[in-house]
Figure 1 (tube, rainbow, N blue to C red):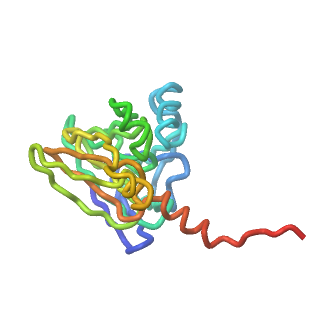
Figure 2: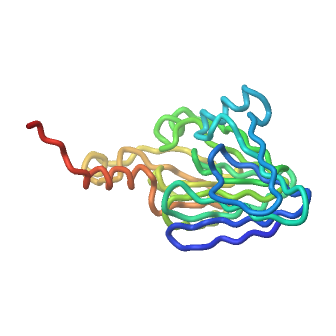
Figure 3: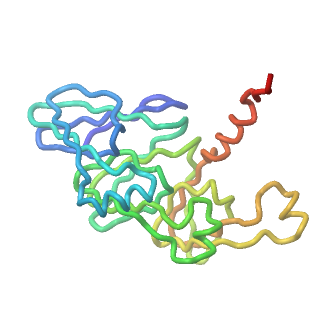
Amino acid sequence: MKYQIKGTTFQSLDILLEAGDSVFTESGGMAWMRGDIDMSTNTRGGLMKGLARKLAGESLFLTTYACKANKGIVTFTPDAPGSIVHIPLNNGESRICQKDAFMVAEDSVSLEIHFKRKLGAGVFGGEGFILQKLTGPGNAWVEIAGEVREVDLKVGETLKVDPGHVAMYDPSINYDIERVKGLKNMFFGGEGLFLATLTGPGKVWLQTMPLSSLALKLFSHMPVKTSS
């Protein structure tokens, strides 16, 4: 499937559909389209799967865009400044993503929720217990806040990360949480009480600007109302 990512800070994704091709996205995810494109919206898999996706940060309903004849182009845009990442998935291959990361995928891709197994990782892992899981075959695209850094971890190699910077990782990665050592580091280090520990083998996608950090920064610049 042909596609093109345009822009820098505020990117857009053009997907070229030929007759018989189809992609799906969350409700309201499309920006514009042209050509002979048919749009249909449903819970995709039934009400229970729709409710499960809602817990993982997506909409209850998903919309499918199918090209009926000739060619068409559908354009998608992210909800915040950042990067659009293409994920080519083989049959049975998966990626674990943070909540709200899913953007659009071929009709053959499965979008499911993913539960963190360990209590500590779920409570203090930055995104809670529920994440998103994309499984192939097919192409998928996710939106990641800020710029993206990819890190390949060897067997037994560990990367310690502020939990909010973890955007996506291979299922082979072991995700856990550890407490920051030292009282001064915990309370005055500015990194919070916990760090995520990601242990290989596998690949990790990191984001330079967690949405929570952006929201706090914007909030600090908002005018404060004073009572008259």
